[in-house]
Length: 339
Image (cartoon, rainbow, N blue to C red):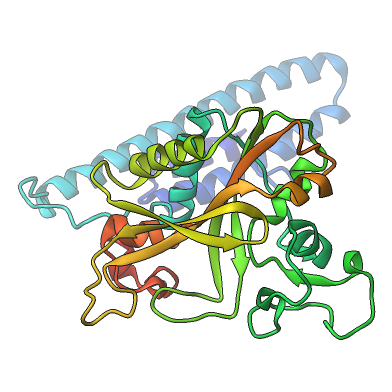
């Protein structure tokens, strides 16, 4: 017990927190601590003596634990006192700026798209970026001679010259329209879906990127018309981009819609110095072609609907007056911190 008494004296005279930690380990260590070894010796004592000595050791355990706690508090108080006198804090100083991360513009805008169209009754459907030629082209009524299939536009995973069936030939999907086929083939109408995701084409300039994002929409029901399409698009895009955004619809041609329209928005470009001019193409839309409905097992005499596909980056360019689409992917913090 005299050894434990000397340990108590060492604790009370310890000059630093590190010294207290070392003494605590010396006393309470599971293998070699002085108190631990003393407790192990109890097993060798007669029962009457074991009870007496056990009580004494428990008392020492409490005494030493209290001494360690008290000494730590004393040393901490001294340290804080020195800080107050030797290293005073000036509470009037401004703190350095604290960087806070936030979601990138693109996934944040996709979240907003899902929320806005969700309020109009659209479900979110997602699918693979590696797609078969069958779903990416054939079932969407895109002819084999269509330029969209050309290797200059499409990233083919399977050699396009290899003689394989269309459901065994793979591409990086060129549009999210593949989800029209996947969803409509497995769900009964009526339904409304929005399909956001990455797509891939061999383009790269101020308003094009080899990898970009689209959101596809499809609505199938009865008595669906172009008026429904235009009303939903104008409502949704004004909610996403701005109430005063200007649109124009132009007639277009897409194999998977008939009739087809293209939607432009007014942006910051100048016809004199921008090849895009003052109007920037957003995407295409139209009434779903009867052949597409048939390919999905839907009777076009009973059901009809519309589809649309738009980029994510271009509406963002208009919303934030960004002149170059490639800025989204450079990872420049000076650009990203603006939003």
